[in-house]
Length: 296
Image (tube, rainbow, N blue to C red; front, side):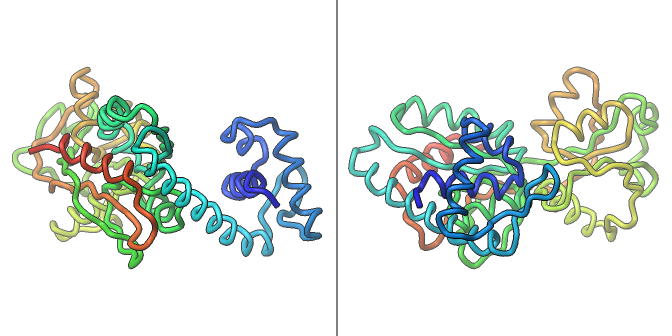
């Protein structure tokens, strides 16, 4: 069994798809299929069920996945420890971030880090808050950056920045054509929301609770799995939406969105790190740079 086989197995297991795993790993489809076949054949255990043209992780594969992730996490920690001995001249830092942070908050901080330490390769993955927290807990990422609340006993969570949420509608929406006096009645329009597990959605739910409302009180027209999808749907007139101020400002500047002057809470961006796993110098330096770029 090799580390490369483990990496390939985890990639296929997470995507339940040979071709997508091959694309993510920059390998050929035949190389990925051969690695899985060799791993299963060497140990006489089928890790996937082949159903038609699909590949599905079976019970044995589920049990092995946790062990494979653990091995790869320990390898990453060992690599980080060795990289520290090089004085940040080479190495790798794995960062997972939620969509809002990865799209608008993270890039300038990555740029600043790369300028200071060009020998450190940055591996960045994007997911929702729940997915990012799981990646840090399982060791797939050293650093997690999320805007949602996370309650996991193995993770340290600290505030690294903050941003206001914006309520926006398309220019033809009744609230844009005839702005209401005071706060609008949130139950009297269709809504376009992010998926469950999204930090934006959980922050909006908290804001609703402060007004004595819940999602069940709203007319939810669409639930979409990405920030850009939500913004595009709102711009097209599908309903109202709540998104980060940085995202909303792009549509407002183009005249494609209208922001309503409703008081929504400032949400915090959180840094996640494992309480017990090895913390590299590269990770510590990145956190310092990110904090220096935080809003006053």
